[in-house]
Length: 392
Image 1: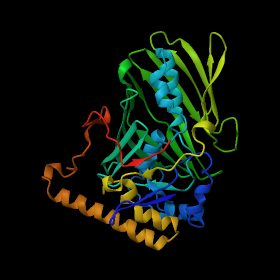
Image 2: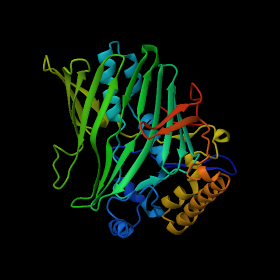
Image 3: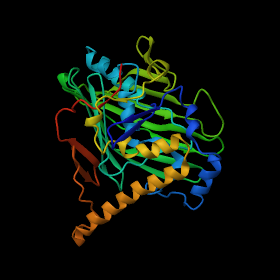
């Protein structure tokens, strides 16, 4: 954990990113009797209910925002897998690298804890080397996060628009992450589109958190696709299934499989050439997600008031100190200010628009339709260098 005083008025609290070795150590800021507290919290929730409006007490929070979690999947890694995507010489080589990078964005999450729900207009801005990442919460109900990341040196741009929808199903919570992810390799004029697996939190018979479901990755320009299936334990622990991934890379025009993909996203993932039977390790989680560095504030004066680590700084500090009463008081104050702002916006709207929020995002142009869901376009071509950095 890092506590950074941004100025006389801003406190930025930055905590270690999710990694393989800190998966169990997250218990250091858990409240006691967590399982009993979870069951009590969900006792009045009906199966199938949407949990996006559920207000969590700070005892259930990781000391970081969901924006930070999304951002970490890009800027927190030991392997420069994005640069490899751009530098591969052939379309097939680049596609394989994109598949490996996609797998690397999955991180082990602690059971029974969740990040803060971002407030409307909250931002997160971090740089690592020549990669600059910017996120903004562009809608609160439903929650929608827009992300833009650019690496001008390596001709890379990423645009995501993500809207998680958690639902309670009695013995588990399943979160569908709606929205498309686009990775653009600009000098090759290639765009890779992909979706996200589901996040499943199980309570019985074995408590745990898994990424499950199907992911499709496609590059229209090269005519190559991939289908990946993420699996996990259901009832009994099975090491061969737990956190496993299996799939194929094939040509869109003929559906001919070129490579088979298999392994575990928290261990290693293997690529097998179906014609030669030769195997190659395309992803090593221990190498990529081991001892990840915590971001630091490099330019305190440039940190925005809307920065996640500032918005939630005092709450995070109280959680780390296990001062639950203080954390609840500060968190309630933040959430009440957001509700008051929503009421003020609603009072200014015409009756026929009362269901719409008139919030205009600062960094993105956002649209929504029943057919295509949420989409976002960045207002600027490049993300500027951030005041918060991850040192190599």
